[in-house]
Amino acid sequence: SATKSMASLAIGEALCAGKIKNLDDAASTYAPALQGTAYGAASIRNLLGYTSGAKDTEANGYSGVHVGREFGALIRQELSLIDLMKRHGEPSSSKPGEKFNYNGLNSEALSLVIRGATGMPLPKWFESTVWQKAGAEHTAAWFTDKDGNGVAEALSWMTTRDFLRVGIYTFERLTGKSGDACMNAFVKEAAQPRTAKGYWGSAPYWGLGLHVGADKNIWFFGHGAQRL
Image 1 (cartoon, rainbow, N blue to C red):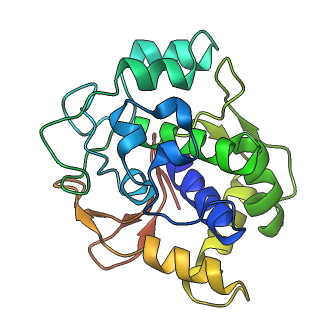
Image 2 (cartoon, rainbow, N blue to C red; image 1 turned 60 degrees about the vertical axis):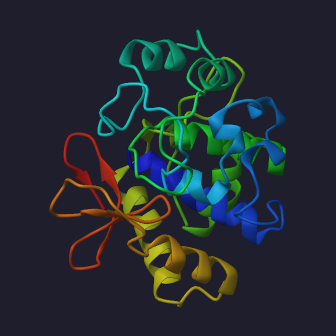
């Protein structure tokens, strides 16, 4: 699930490159295939904040991925992200921006936004921006759907050293030391405790793709105790 935070950084880079005009634009502005779904109607900001207002496919707000059997089909390239958005794109009883819901399809919608905005699938855009700027040294991997879209909610693969380099990239922008004023501002905003999650006492808040600790420290969280 640390991949969710990687996708957030990629959105920031697209914003700062002028590929995305405003985080308050509807996702369907850049990904017209999302029209008619709650994800397409949601703003990019609310997708980053996991407050899209879309119905949770597992009805618990906690799992971090959508229905397990479909996620398996997705990474076996039997389904596309568009298939899933249309299948599970109905609105919930919550308005956009109102309630945190840890449903990974919010990040999947962002993957489609990045492809529409930049002309590159998420893994390629991430590689050409965050990965290079972080000074990553080793080969990494990213699952894609059957249409070549990057799976944005989980399962990117990299060495521990390069994972740390992405952390340093984030820290430099969080502390205003990167020389990139736009990304400095984006990461600082992303690190604000925007919504209470209602669980995970060590990091009870969510910003814009980043977990925020009770002591305001910033976390990337992944399955199996992966932490940054």
